[in-house]
Length: 88
Image: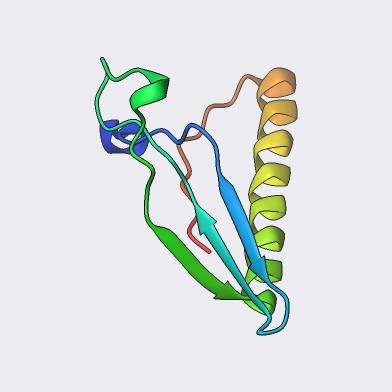
């Protein structure tokens, strides 16, 4: 697997809503180096999206999780390995 895949692991998330305007703001705090402590995590940038975009993101995450779950079942049954990276 590519080393860049795990370069900035997130430590959580912050979600804010603006119901009147139909917007969400999502922020993902992350670690920028291996020795960084959780309390020192970079707060990340706020990403703003419309409610429909958030639904699409939710669905894309669900599909990716389903693929991971299906892969785990296939790997345990057949011993297959795959380094697939899906971009939605």
